[in-house]
Length: 180
Image 1 (cartoon, one colour):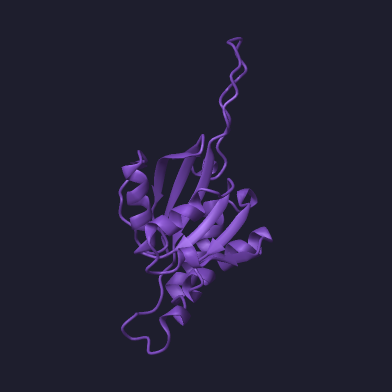
Image 2: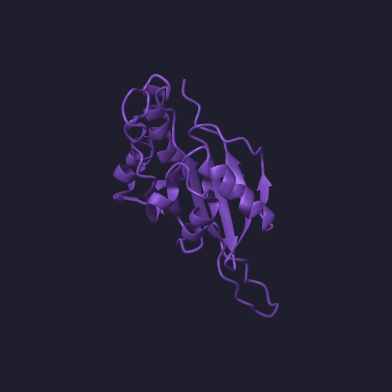
């Protein structure tokens, strides 16, 4: 997929002389797995407070160019610190605050996360976890979503969810940013 079109899908070309039928613009929502965090087993405090690692902070900064902050309309995160920190550089670049939503927290049933997805605006960026995103995307696949690319979900990776006419039709997989 062309990197310049990640969140900015275009309306159908209506410049020809055929009858004009207006369809809603294809909607794109970014569903990001939080960037690399420190080891869960080595963390002795509440897991909700486990921060990003140095690698994770670099991945989070790279999301700014990957997701084109000028096209972002909302930032919604799991209340876990590592998810919030994943979206913070994008929030700084776009001037849009990060909103916390428990429907993106670990161990959330896919039905609950789907209830959030169904009402989001184009350009929304979500950040969640390695259990929530695959369960939610699998549920969308059962409803007809087609995944373009591998279905792997590494830390810092993103699914661009394309919605048309209220239905999720395609997901493009973006691997995590490469950190040198």
